[in-house]
Length: 255
Image (cartoon, rainbow, N blue to C red; front, side, top):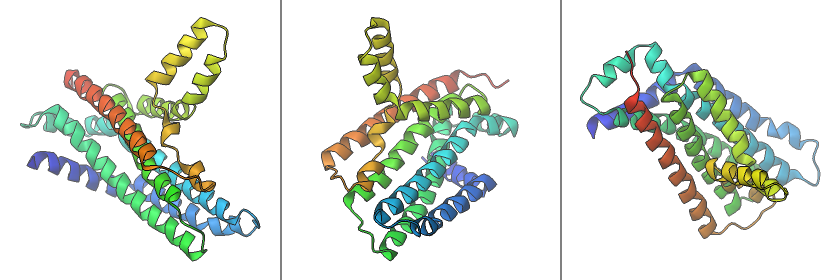
């Protein structure tokens, strides 16, 4: 357990020292603060603009950060030759991979908590109502980042950083459109198209299930059952991705 925790903390320290992480954090805070400029031109949609811009900036920056950190994990270890040192130690490759995943997610979580605190402080400052939907939107974003991390780690276990990043971005875009693809395919008269649409829907993560930002914007009530179902779906999907990543990583030859 000691080496496993050490790997996670070491991954957190490395990601924290990364200049891109710092720049993304600064840029995210700047975008949240720029909300005040947008609010100057709004009259009847004050609260909606504040929610849209704040949650949108938070989501965009954290997604980009997660993709960068997860997709380049193994590639950076191989470039720096540290992977050879790690695989020679009495710790399994699976533990090494999961430890790195937890370290990266710890970095993302700390940054998300800071951004969420700033976002809620801004809402309180402007006396905008904070509802359970706002908390749900921030919480479910965390689970969405877990899924994206799983995709990035799966790809980085056997491919380059550029390929991993491209695939992860593609999965993010397609995952948000998965339910729409399924509905459109269902309306087709072609059985092949319908089958393809169903395959895409069930293979890709349905990230729309984790997107509660519209609920926060329009103050839609969110039930605990719905949240638990979405969270369970995200963690189950992430578990499958990480398991596949461990299998592929164990079979990879680093010679």
